[in-house]
Every structure is written in C-alpha cells, then in structure tokens.
Amino acid sequence: MSTRAQFQDVKLDGRNAIMVADCPSAMADGGWSAGLIFDEDATPEQQQALGAILSGQVGGPMTAYAPWVSKFLGTTTKKIDFVKDGLKPLAVRRGDDRQRCGGRHRT
Image (tube, rainbow, N blue to C red; front, side):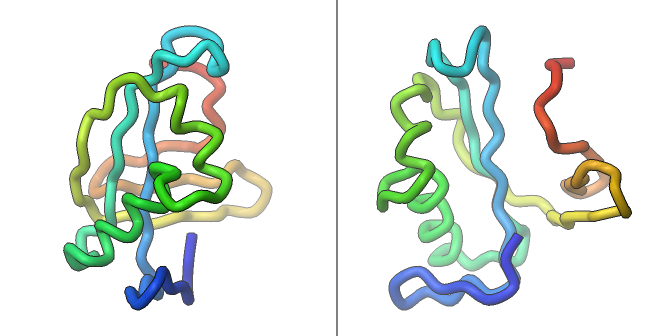
C-alpha cells in the first residue's frame, strides 16, 4: 500500500499492485503459479515498474520468492483498494471482489 513512491524516474504515488500466487504444497517447495494485478489507473510505465519490483527483477525482498515461481500467469488491471477495519485482517478489494489477506487456506 503506497501513498508516495518512485522507482527510477517513474512516480508510483498512490498506485497499488498485488502479487497473487498458488502454492500447490509447502511454499518453500516451489512450483508456484503467480500473476500480478495492477491498479486500473496505472500507466504502462507504472505497470512495468511495479512488475519489476514485484517480480524481484530489481532486487529487494521479492527476489527471495522469484525462484519458487515456475509458472507466470500474466498481468491484469483492476480497481484495488486496501481496507483496514480495526483489528480485522487487512482486506483487498479488486473490482467487486473482496479478499482477506493472510493466506490461511486455499479455496
């Protein structure tokens, strides 16, 4: 969740992005299928910058996850809102969908 951010010369102020992954067994076993969802208002340049960050291509903490992804599902754009409601887990709204964060189980 970002309010002011920049990557190289691309301003990312207020842009949101989500990496989603399906881990068929223990996360460290790899074999993940992953995709990226970008804020619907993100420009192509912002999408490229956010993709580089979330894929680990430019270093940072996401670099640790990159080797576990064996299938990249692509990218899409949606309206993304992060919602904090008191002590409840963070919720993410993607368009009309709402998903609680936490990764407790697969549905």
